[in-house]
Length: 121
Image (cartoon, rainbow, N blue to C red; front, side, top):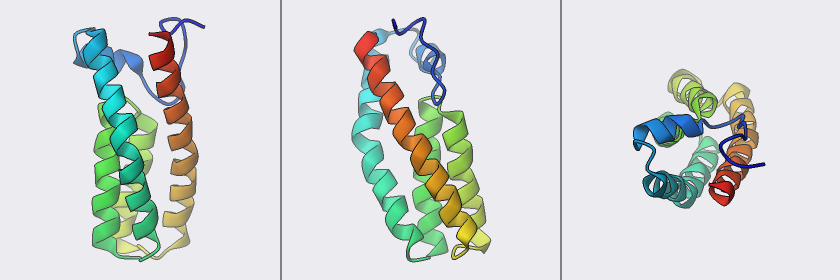
């Protein structure tokens, strides 16, 4: 399937295109930056959830929220933001861990979609 006709479930290529005035090189750069930096941010969140230190969880989740928003992955950003919010009052709860498991599944899906997008655009 060619990228423009492809529908993505976890990120919005139109968001990045609007952000970059449809500059394919800049769009690809944003996606490459995300693919390079986000694994470190994600591991950081995974590690701090085990602590449970509310400040560290909040900070790590906040970095991912911004990164997800930057590529138009709004559902992932919302889920990371939920972890941010809940970690402030209940960092040790099972809910934070459950939300992280859901976010992790979505994260790997968005990585696949971004790589697919780069392949066809």
